[in-house]
Image (cartoon, rainbow, N blue to C red; front, side):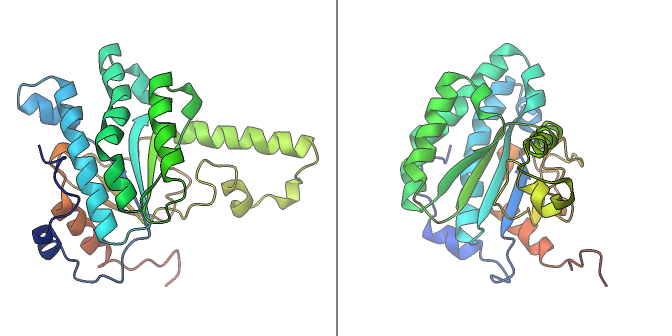
Length: 253
C-alpha cells in the first residue's frame, strides 16, 4: 500500500497538472462508494475494502491540496450505515483513529485543517477522542479544510434545523419574516462553509444517498465507475477537468 509514501512525489506533481489551474472548484464533496464491491471482486472480506479505501482518502487529500481546492468534504459514515453488521461498524469506527495516527503529521505539514459534520456526540468514545484530537491539533491551520461527514444524514440535518428555528422563534430570537435561504443555511452543520461546487461519486451509482441535499442545489455532479479503493490523483484530475468544461448558469442564460 502507498499510504506511507511522502505526501506528493515530484514525479506525481509532473504527471497530474491541471489544464486550467485557475478554474478549480472551491469545495469538492465525495461519496466514497464501492469498498465492499472492491473486496468482493477479490474474494476478500468487506473490511479489506474499507482498509484499502483509506489509501484512496490519502490520494484524494493529496490531489485536493495540490490543486488548491479549499474544502474537501468526504462522506465517511452516514446515519443509515448503522444498519450494517456490527463487526463492520466496529471496524469503520476504528478507521479514523488509524488514518489520523499515520497521517496527522503529514496533514499538519500541509497546513490542512480537520472538521466534521454530523451527529458527532453519538459516535463511540474512541472515535470521538481520535477525531477531536485531530480537530484541536489542526484548528489553527488555514489551508485545505478536510471535512469528514461522520454519522451524517441530510434529512435529519434539515429536520433539526427546522426544530432549532421554531425554538428560536418561540424564544423571540428570530422572526418568521426574517427566515430566508441564508438564515436557514446558518442552522445547518455546514454553517459558514461554501456550498459544494462539485460532487464526485465513485462505483457507478448515481444518487445522493441523503448527502448534503440542501447544499447541493446547484452543485455539478460527476459520476465514475471507479470503485473507491481504486480512486487516485488521476481520477480526481479527470473530475475537475470535466467540471471545467461546464457552464454554471444558476438558472440564468
